[in-house]
Amino acid sequence: MILPCLIIAPTPSMGRGVFTLEPLEADTLVEISPVIVLSETDRLLLDKTLLHYYIFEWGEDNKACCVALGYVSLYNHSFQSNCEYEMDMESQMIRIKTVRPINAGEELFINYNGDWNDPKPLWFDAL
Image: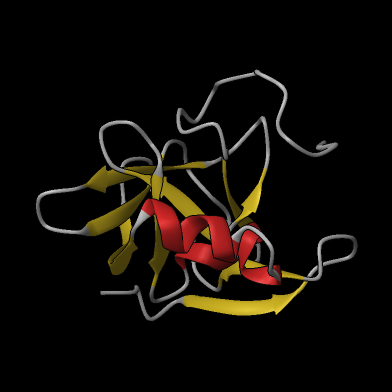
């Protein structure tokens, strides 16, 4: 499930991202995406490729990974994110939900640390 008002569009500095064409209220479920779970061995191989930047850590020990289908892997990072993601390991799904109202035309961001307001530094220089 992806809200029909979401689009992929170019961004000024991050390549492309997910935007909304309509205003969204806080706590709106904007996407439910199935994932493809990959083993720790597969992750070591993916970490040597461009896909490293699009996968999510997965499993109790975060050694496995997953590739999210839908738009999930295209949400850009922000420490002031307007969305959060929730991993459902039993159902092998990731859900994206707004954490505040979002205006039409605004980009949707998640915090790559997992919690929408987590200020910890990332593995790359981030805004």
